[in-house]
Image 1 (cartoon, rainbow, N blue to C red):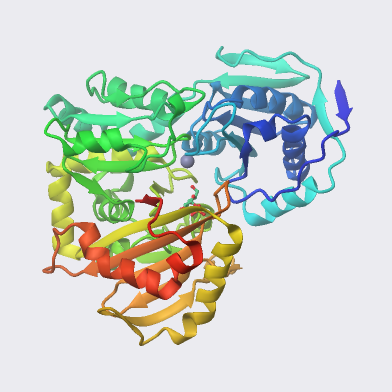
Image 2 (cartoon, rainbow, N blue to C red; image 1 turned 180 degrees about the vertical axis):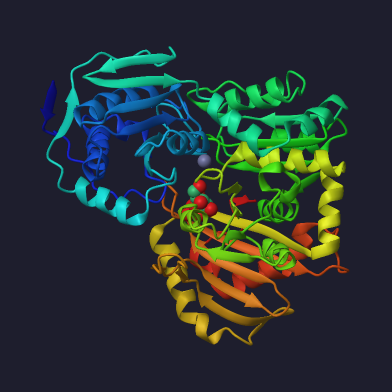
Length: 543
Ligand code: G1P
Ligand code: ZN
């Protein structure tokens, strides 16, 4: 039976961003709120009659409630079948894989990524399309348009299903199968990587610390690292997904994964350390005594990927987001393949991956992945590192030093100024944009501006143009500062300042990053007037 429900609280019409709709749990709990958004998604999906839909999330508070709502609504909207991860759990990369593997029309991925969870914290819903990737802009725009006019949502009257019992049940005439959240993903990883070589390394005494941050990767990490690869019990830390992530931010950076960082810098450090975020798409890589920046990790993985069986045929191309350092560009050049520079956000990689133009891609914000799915993938990155180390038989630190000796080193940091007033942040960007044309040839301390522009991207596959994707100031010698406002913050505006200094092979390769970036940090304030506009004398977060 289909029930038509008139919304009593209209959808608030706020634009869902590239990562879907993200709000506080309390907002999603308002009567009709989640339903209106889900219905707007379903109203836009073409060909849903009889089609397969995937639903899963990162296990945060409110996950189970929205899954039950979405299942009933899918039945009323004519879907043929729904696949749900056991316990409502599917990491974002695992959801991408399930959509692709089972030929689903798309999927609802419930997550607020690395943001905190709990009754007073964040929730999110995003729609992924049949290639397994986030919906492209024309679909998210259509969903948004629909939210402004929606006048009813459809549901069936049915009891909640048992999300913990593997098997198939029926809801309003539609079949719902609860599947093992981990099995398909683990099989995919085993097809890409040489598990025997990694297991041999673990047997030989190589140790690993993986921090799942009480988030979604726990079950995946237990099965893969401890179960299939034979790392010792206890290798996976914080491996049980909690609805509030144990009151932590499940954000694998040097601030929120400080415990892991401190361990890796201590005398008791295991050989390799890694962490992943709330929904399992980000990664943090720390070798014994060395933090590997995500930009360097992308370059190092690309340079060595052929050592893993899934990439033995070589890479078709590399793609990185614009603010990500140019370290990967030098690898691409050496390999004789293209390196694409895209705007921030994983969705820009989708076309390049679908077209077979890029195999590996990454962002400075701890996202790395390949054409195996259409999302970034935290555990994948850790496994590729382990596979490479198992074949090369060197510590991560030696691999990094060897890489820099060959390609040079891109010293890199990102400074975030959070919760700024939107007006002040916009004024800073507007003033800097107006000043860009006059910047070339000006000197800031020892740095001389070579070029300055507002980044614009023309997609090489579909020709679509995305303008105003960040302000770039390039200096003579290959250093660079990028200024942009975050598109994912939930409070005011966040200014991100990306600092990069290139030291060629033969230069200073083993210095401390803050020392190497001091001139750039001073230049960033001189050029953009950060203190003058924001009143802030230091960033809130340095990564
Ligand atoms: C941030 C990251 C970006 C990433 C996005 C979603 O976006 O910078 O690389 O794709 O989160 O995880 P931002 O807040 O900078 O717009
Ligand atoms: Zn995430």
